[in-house]
Length: 504
Ligand SMILES: Nc1ncnc2c1ncn2[C@@H]1O[C@H](COP(=O)(O)OP(=O)(O)O)[C@@H](O)[C@H]1O
Ligand SMILES: [Mg+2]
Ligand SMILES: [Zn+2]
Image (cartoon, rainbow, N blue to C red; front, side, top):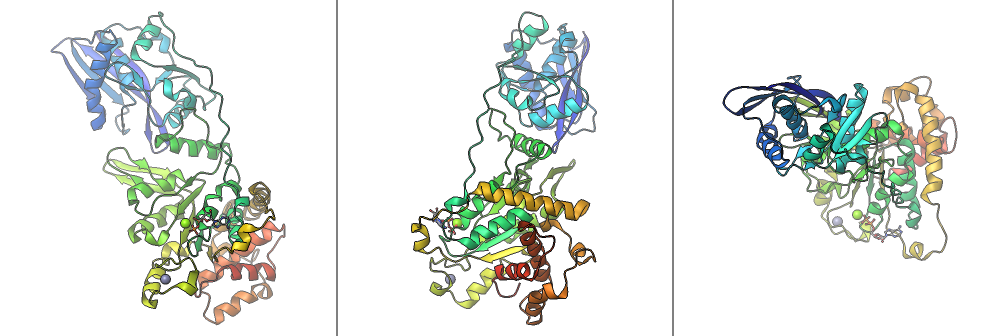
């Protein structure tokens, strides 16, 4: 009979907090009470832990057992504490010596048979332990490569509770498998595959360089989906901090490959148009899952056939895109996930979706207008690049001319990003994020002459005030790609020419 404690990690959003799992075993009627704000999964854990202990050949203390997870105010989810609970109970009630665990955090779900099973969010959990000064993480075998992405902590793995018990009695070792050879990241899709379609390729380059949200309209087969899928391949690779953030989000979502490679390339998420608000922004019952917009953090959220998404779903994206994060309100408080995604939308210009484009369309104008109305509104207001694409001519597909590959474009993009970053300083990382007030600031205001093409369009009622600002942002990106310090009138004209929809 006695008391013992073992450490584990609770996650809220992508932040982890080391928690103490303490067990007190006292004489009395055999019982097990778990306290410390456990959720439903944790109460199920009672039976799982008991069965796992039995099936590992250890004795479950026949006594009054109290398990407490503290601090109490930290919301604790899921099954990742099972293993820590089992060890604490055995240490408190069956004299299991835990000195060898020392300064360790213990993660892992238990199977009824005593196996230790993988859990989600191991990367952010081990990162939190390391930041809190812990030197040792004991993780499920399947999660070992992911845990090892955190380099300044000793990672050991186990496949079963029995192995941990053996380790503590010094009869068995923990697992320390050789690092798996890291597979090369599959080559990104290349823009060289997109023939003809100069305009589409240009739009993708501009979107990448300025980090502009982009909407492409055009008939089926124009190559919209192809182009969007190739945007990540010309975006700058993630830096170390971004890479950890993105990998942590995918870890929490449970979709990291077991080889545990850091995600280095800008991710892309392409939710289907029938996807729910929850699938897009996150949430769900119990533990709040990151949605597509968070899995696209530092990458691309691609809404293909965007006119088919429900208005409610599109509306739910607006605030997260503006804030760069998603706030999910739960009964116990708020879970926040990062969500700094670049939006790419694609749509047919009208519901009949005829391959010939506008000329072949038979839709009544009211139907067209209603359809177009779905593609406007507050979300579209944030989209700097809104362009029409023409169908590709057969000649373009038969050409033997080679076009620039993504690797060449990516270099220009990187240079342009650096120029923009240096110019805007702390105000913005890219032209797409520059506030309108800064564009009007004396330091950056463009001359009357340079803006002339825009003012004419405005006076004719063909360009809105927002459209005016968006064109200026795009003009800055065009200038950055050419290595100029400021846009000139030709840059502004190109920016304007890209927006072929009538009034924007
Ligand atoms: N510019 C292009 N170069 C080469 N193939 C193309 C091009 N545009 C379209 N295709 C071909 O047509 C198919 C459909 O293109 P897709 O990107 O799905 O068009 P959209 O999304 O505009 O309907 C592609 O898979 C590709 O085989
Ligand atoms: Mg398509
Ligand atoms: Zn039509």
